[in-house]
Image (tube, rainbow, N blue to C red; front, top):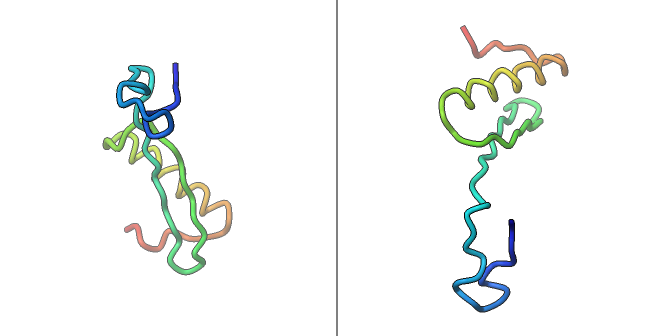
Amino acid sequence: MRRVGHRITGNPQQGKSRGTGWEFVHVAIDDASRIAFSQILPDEKQESAIVFLKAALAYYASLGCHRSFIP
């Protein structure tokens, strides 16, 4: 359950719940067009980074961008 945090209530004990956590925003920006692609994933580990990279490459390919930077 999410609650209002201590910055709003003034109570430093409020808002400390085990139900909240971290999410990580992964972002790719095409250098030439400045078009951005982002995803929110549960962590920044290798598996998530690979999933993100594949999704980003598919997105840019759908726009007609080519992967000239990957050998």
